[in-house]
Length: 471
Ligand code: SF4
Ligand code: SF4
Image 1: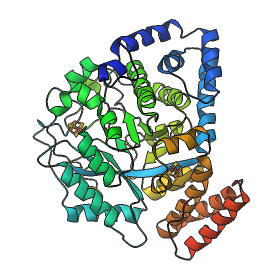
Image 2: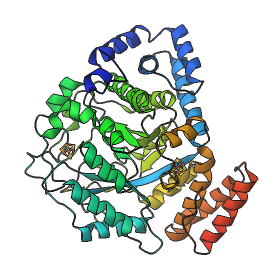
Image 3: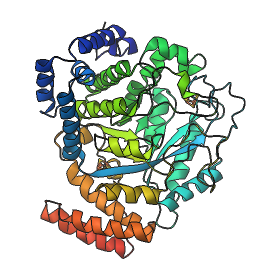
Image 4: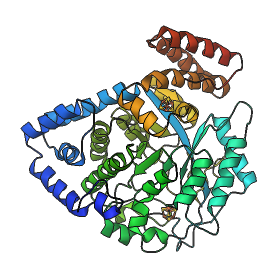
């Protein structure tokens, strides 16, 4: 029985409710009155439920679809402005005991070179990332209680935060590791992590069990209830995501929103972020073997519909996607992107891309400097901001500001300050020139005289060598 407040995975992600939602969406995909009603509700900026959002996703009316995309673009501007936060993944270890059929790190892949970073190697990776200008990382590791126990992950987090190289510092470490216990989540919270990210992969239990034939990840309920345990362990900010291509996108979309509704109903805080990975080619993985692949058009619509259904949630896209795809979806709601990513273990400390321990092919292979310039040329402010978590604006405190559309008052000046740091410390001459012009334009858009004058003061101090100002 469907119950968003339940602690049981099969009740808050209810298969029958999803099937009935998809039927309802299909029956109403050309129902102009209902679609108008849902769009009117969306315009109140309080979000949509999975049923309403699924009707919009199914909608086939051209002019209504244009309206959906325009609304998503407007929401993006209203809630987050024109800043795009940048981060990089850091692969710690690709040892894994699971048997996921879509990932080359699965335990049976004997051709995969297994690597685990030593603390000395973590340090070298972090220095390489700091030298690019990164301030925010997402650490990744396979599930392996012997090779990657929680103590190893905690030691790596500690090492990462401790490295201060030139003007560099990693100010926020997000963590993407396997589902674990409340006790371990508490240890991660105590280590000062930012967001705990765990992709559901697929919400369809039957497909889930087929795609995860062996290892602890086979347990659908344990995996699906991980965010509940993370919250019980004191982690305020959790990040959801499915791997599009494994199951029908309509099913995953409804499941994703039901998961968000569950977190909101049960803990009063929806997901901090939602990521949008699509299945990609990798060593011994052929994406064509999966029959539910989606094209860029559908992908963009999923992103636009998510934007208007969960306006308070940050949305992330990685370098799995090409430059042109990223350019398109950034307009429809993406608020965070990765840049200059290496998806191999130890990949940043080498000049050449190493393919023997990669998790997936990277489509967008530009440098961080190139990505920063590209964003600015589209009038976005590349941001390295990590202020909320460091100011204690997490969980419901963050959501409250976001829902009132006030977070923008922090995001905008913080984006300018962290961009300035990047321009002074890491940018090429050409990027610096474009950036200085952008900052001069954007500073005049700060509404509060007090914030504007403080920002001007901080910008000057950054020029003179001080760092790490934030609102
Ligand atoms: S997706 Fe994660 S759990 Fe599955 S094989 Fe890859 S690294 Fe292991
Ligand atoms: S102010 Fe908060 S929400 Fe805005 S970019 Fe910084 S950390 Fe993110």
